[in-house]
Length: 374
Image 1: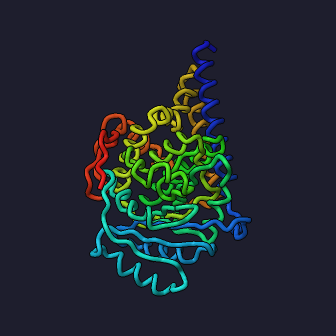
Image 2: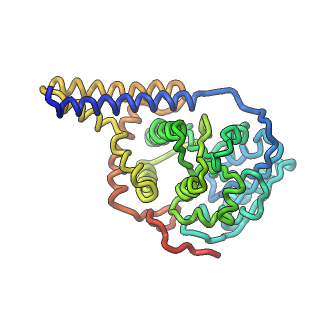
């Protein structure tokens, strides 16, 4: 075998082994476990949920906030307009749980081009927690969510996050999105945290109060087009770590369309490329087709090329299938195959385009040179 073929085969094997290792780490980190209901701390925790509109899962997700097994807790819901259809739902839930320290804040405080961050901003100054936890509306919090967040604390930790654990898909398209969120993005988030290089994910951002005090609120998070990327960079700049919880919190996916998936993944691709370009470039080798092509090119005949490529693909998806069996992720192998057609295309597009639309707002993945305040 020529040297070039040997190198290609070695690279194919290395990529496949790395993939199997990532599946093993994710399976261990995301496996089911008993609720964590006792911690030796009484930290004051503020839960902030920015809201816009009502979806099928909104009521269940918001209700989960009132069922958290943590006593020293305040809950703040944020909406931009009193006309938002979620307002009556929030007011009803606050009335149904009178013992909860919950309130609704209405108003618009523009600190960036990011509409969610602008909605969240008014909570700073209105909350007094030792930890301030921002949670998206479509996250269903487990009863022990606060305990699982605080369990990741340590002297070097500034922020704890939870990527979504995608559940309850309705249809093929939604199952493909589960494959993207769970066995692709969630798997690599688990690995990054395991090696001490965690990234924040905007679904759940749990800040120690002093981290936000360095920014006098959330203003600094507007220095990047995505608040989770800005949070990651800010925390690292303070010499602190970003951690992610074991066993991510559930996000009911429901119904999706191919258009929804494409727009979401290309938006996220553009944001990742703009904020973490070197890590984004490395995503090129995270798809099975690269390892399969290298394995095929390391052989001398078409039959052996097909066998080598097929073996890589079988091991690749076999590892993910075993991981999903352990974790309870709902996607099937054929959903992952479709995922691995969509994601490379979205990755290429991420290099080519920076502009996108988010909830009716035209945005750019490039950093803003000036941040509007007030």
